[in-house]
Length: 283
Image 1: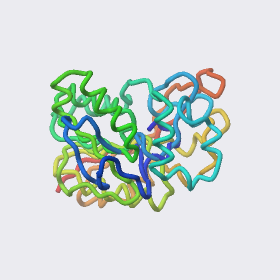
Image 2: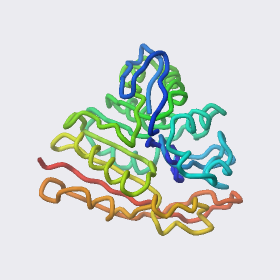
Image 3: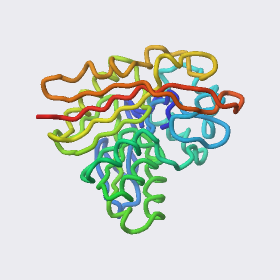
Image 4: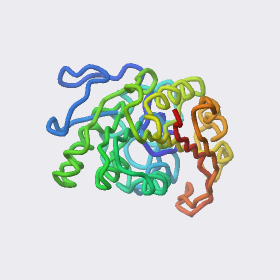
C-alpha cells in the first residue's frame, strides 16, 4: 500500500477477517503457478491519489485511484478488512509500479536471499527484489491485489515469476515462520499503535541471524495539512518508537527521519519525512 496511511494490513502492505477465494484459508500460500497471491501493500494504510504515485505518496489524500479519499475519512475501523482493500484495488491500478526508494537504497547493498514484503500492495517492491535475484514472498490482505501481483510477475518474465509467491494474510494476526528470511520489509503499513508494535515483533521474529528488518512509514512530523494525512495520529509513529520493540542485545539498530519531495494535495511538491527503521539481527 502506499503509504499514506494505508491501513493496509491488518493488513499493509494493508484485514481482521480477510475473506478467502477459491477455498483458500488465511495464511495459505500459492506458488507462481497459481497466478494469485497474497496480502497492503500496502495492506492497511491509506494511499495516495490523483495520478498514480509511488507507494507512500498520495497527493490529494489517501487514495489516488481506487476508493476516493472520502473512504478514508469515514470510520477507520472499516480500513482493516479484506473487503475494504479488495474494493480499493478492484477499481483499477493504484500505484506507479516503481519500488519504494528506501527499500532500493538498503537492499541494493545486501546479498540476495529470501525476502518477505508485508503489505505488498501491487507488488512493485517484491518484483524489484525478484529482478535483483531475491526469492520473495509478497503478503497482503487483499486477494484482488495479490492476483494482480501474480499477473505482473508473470509479465516481468519467467525468472521473476519463479522467484515470487503471493500470500493472502491479515497483518493484524498473521505471524510468518520464525527465522526464515534474510530481509523482511514493511513499507507504509499503518495500524493502530498496539497492533503495529505487535506486528513488528512478529516480523522481527521472521528475520534470520544476519538478516535485515526494514520498516518505513510516515513520520509523525508530517501530520500537517500540507502532507494531507488522515486524522489518525495513533497510526503514525517515529522510527525510535518502532525500534522500541527490538531487544538491543540481539539487534544492531539504525533509525532516521529522511526528507523527500512528494506531491501535495494540489499536486505541488511538498517536503515530507519518512520514519525509517533498519535493524540487523545479530543472533
